Length: 123
Image (cartoon, rainbow, N blue to C red):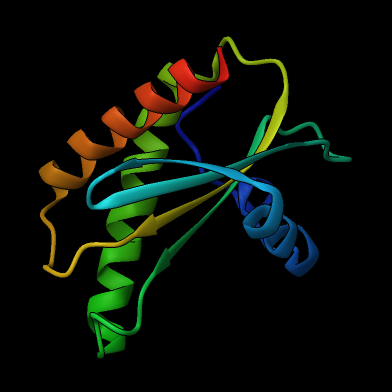
C-alpha cells in the first residue's frame, strides 16, 4: 500500500456510514476514536476511511477543517505500515473527540496508537 489517500479510498456512502455506526466496533486512543466494520467493496481497495470532527466543541469551520486535514494527513502517512498485511476489507471512521486544538505530532502519535489497538483487536 502506498502513501496516497485518493478518491477511491474515501468513505462517502451514506448507507455504509450508517451501517458503520450501528454495527461497527470501535477502539479509542484519546483524543481519537476509530469505528470500523468489516465489509466488501467493488473496487480493489483494502480500506475506505472518513474523518469527522464535532461541531459542538469546534464552532468555526476553520478549526474543524484544520483538524480534519491533520487527521487525513496522519492517516495517509501511517496506513502503509498497518494495512500491508491485511487481506480483509474494512470501512473506517476516525473521530476527533477532544476539546482542544491538536498539533500534528499529537495526532500522529495517537494515530499510531489507534492502529496498534485496532491491529490487536482484529487479531
